[in-house]
Image 1 (cartoon, rainbow, N blue to C red):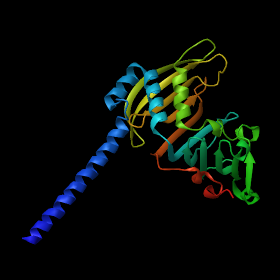
Image 2 (image 1 turned 180 degrees about the vertical axis):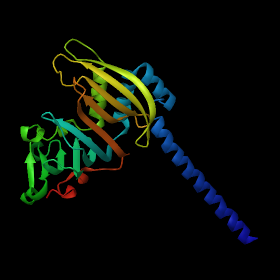
Image 3 (image 1 turned 60 degrees about the vertical axis):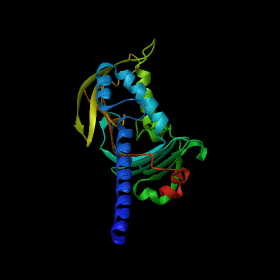
Image 4 (image 1 turned 30 degrees about the horizontal axis):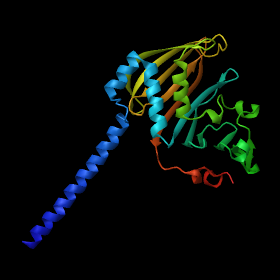
Length: 266
């Protein structure tokens, strides 16, 4: 009888643990889909179809309020000086406040294969390790906006991050004198990269910059971020393609993860 009582108690606690574990898993899933802003999947799709600008603004507010850091892999391909480069594969980690970015090239490095930038540190310069034999020269400092850096990348590291992309999407929806006219159109909802995504197509009327005439974007329905962005020139040529995969959010990154020693940049 005593053994049966003990088994009952053990079984009871196991049941409690399982319920708590299941609730935690369910909560994590619900948080991803409805992060405190009432954005269920059907609601996200409805907003995408009827009012993309509102969706981008709500996504911006959600990201700003809930995301502190993240890791992932960036697949990047850019056209530089008229020539489309090879696709680069880059592992990255990011933390806000201060703006902190660490990158490590996995495939097709262009001039550098490691990068670290922390706003306000190292005289606001990037720490980089050059690719190949040049790595023997050790860590170098580079101004993120200098010409020798921007010949290998269309965008400076100071513009990296989903918050800045979402802010740009929200700002573009507010038309005004002297601003380019960006028209965003819902295309379809489907499954890609292991995610449920919404495809948007954007046409750009900008008399001050004729380089980009159209953009396409895959917007993750659950994460509320663009996980693929592509831009095309006036003749339909691909200007850039950015794909973000294997994203992990709020992983507990701290300033110690953005030191030279932690990123192979001694």
